[in-house]
Image (cartoon, rainbow, N blue to C red; front, side, top):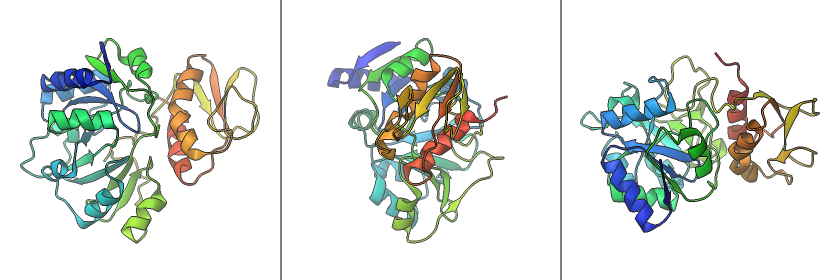
Length: 310
């Protein structure tokens, strides 16, 4: 795997690799994504192979601008409102895929919908703009494990599985994008970097929340996901012997998501701190996290990390 600098030369190399059907990890404002040409079946199959990802779990197609998105999906008034408010940024929309779209059915997991996003990170925007098409990019980690927010997380997990990674430092948001389904009434499919309240404010009315995960319709809906090797104990108000302690607020711990109880800071640190504590082995205990704003997304990731595993 080649470690690319975040320079014009490094971005050009990444673009060239994508055009050749290779796998390139690159930063977004949420997490590092593992990119491949969304219209190339073989390249997308390599993503599943590299991640060990179940084929029934769809991928998000990333674009450099809204006009590129509209060529592949049936656009709606709600999509226009949300895109105007939050793109580029940490929001993914699930819309009906256009019948003539060349995007691989492996990306959609055979569904008639497509998850789309326009990221805000300047490196992602530059690479996507130079590539000129859709890039499928799930998180650049082994399926079900902790998402990467630094290039080092990618190299540790994927070094012998992918072709390159652009090192542009840590991701600013630190949790994946919010996913909103817009095929019928708006539905929150996954909490993330844009809060439910912000979405409701733009749409002017309540949004349904999908809780049934029997049929997966968007990325990040598997019950056990974002999981470290260590067992995870949530809502810990005291610590037990042998536990690595992940705190929130003014508590004594090994690593603290935010001593000042700042949920934005906590989200940005979440996966990095889980990576660091997981390397110590054993069990991870996590302080209670407020369940509002970005705390909803943080608790979603933690609950999946702590879920029973097959």
